[in-house]
Figure 1 (cartoon, rainbow over the protein chains, first blue to last red):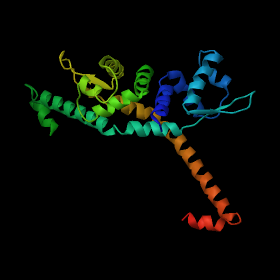
Figure 2: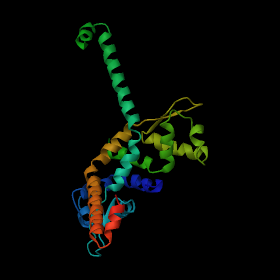
Figure 3: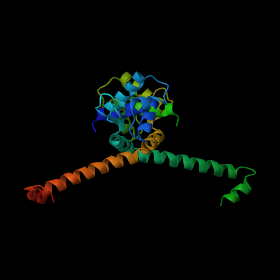
Figure 4: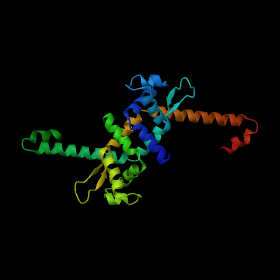
Length: 123
Length: 123
């Protein structure tokens, strides 16, 4: 995926309404009217969000002029996940550090005066 | 993660320079000057990108006024991956459909007159 394409995918995801539309489409094909229903938004506003999603490749729309049903196209999401996945080691390390810190904190608490009983309980 | 926070993370990722900065920081702590080096950009332009990254929680900066080193904070990336991960079934299905289509195409090719040679070449 080109850097530009990946930017479009992340930009499309950077809006709660667009993420909600993807959630709606994950349950099946929907018309614009159906997609607009749960949102407090005009059809033109929803259509604008749909254009952003379509432009990023995350949805496709039927060519029927009367009823242009929308459906999810999830392949670009895999590429976004693969890109973020490069950093897995970093978030795992930060979670490990947090875990170490909490254990250290707990150990200190148990070692503090009056903490003898809990220190023994720790073993 | 609140919808707003997740939007900030995706918006921060929706730019190739900011993604490149994360890649630089994945190799260790860097100063603004070091981060600016490989980019054809002014320090103020890089600083603007750093503010977006900092605001999304993806990087943290030291408090030393002279040298404010940047480091990656990858925890929000895990939450972004978890959000996208909800759609795994969808991209797997679309890849399966593509696979089925390619196999069908190949089978048709083998069955067509003169298709024997290309089928053999395919192995």
